[in-house]
Image (tube, rainbow, N blue to C red; front, side):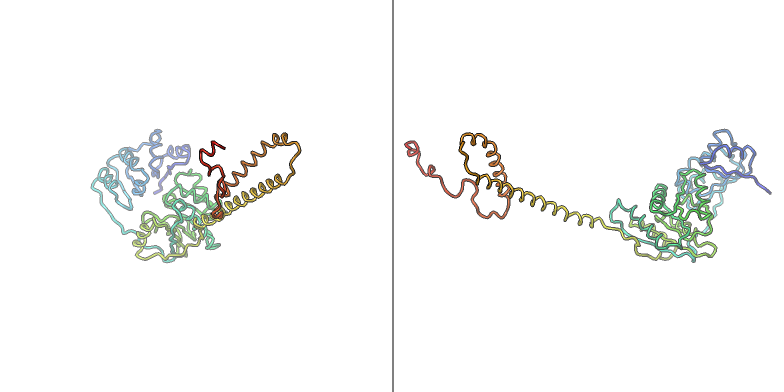
Length: 389
């Protein structure tokens, strides 16, 4: 039996999807948001649905799609057959199954606990020099790993936990000359399609992806997988590294781990039932303490230069005063006194200032400061002698 189908997803124009719907289809494959968009535009009637399949319900819960799922359930007939797939059964998912499913049969499948033996796994655990430098230092480790693998890394996927990190990592790699492109749910479908085609055709060497965007991708010849973040769910680690080492091919998987990821990495090792080998940090990251140490000598040298300058200035002033004292007295004493009054005061002020600066120096010894080491004669006279004199 031949079935017609239509794919309804965001990031694609409504016109092409409307044309498929108008022809009539047997199977609709849709995201919750785009399905409701077509329904609200009057393009879809959900009253004739016989089978409804909800795939990856746990992911939809994480992404906030559960209200949309509940609304879609309410728009479909109660007599439908429902297939509900979920990796975990969170309380919210249990509530939905109890509300919209009638006497469901529960089938549990043992989760995939092992990775392919053809995949070589390793983890790089390090502590960032500072909390605000964690991202930049992790990117430095990633670049060092890519450089160490060299030409053997001909097609790689870098996984990040957050979409914002996908963009940052891809932009950073391109800045340093790597052929990398991001893919995540916030990008237009046309952009994602072009990126995947370029990656499949080996036009793009590195694909930086989120878990959701990479689900369902069938790319046979991926040589390396890099976990920029340790996944929150241990099962996701198995799914991630399963992108490489397919069909008996060899592959490599590297995981970058900082102290806050240790708990998640322990969960991965418990699921795999074996320890992941640790590698030394291939990136030589400079410590901020080195910068601080380098700055200290500069400050002290600047201080010494100021002192040297002030000492040389004082020597120049003293030399000027010596020249003035050695000049012969002028015949016109009155006029000289009037004309030299202002410079003399300036020289005196300069001398006092220099003396005050000089007094601060610790090498002055016990020199007397002030009137000198002699006592004026009038101080020894009594008041009567002063009046008589």
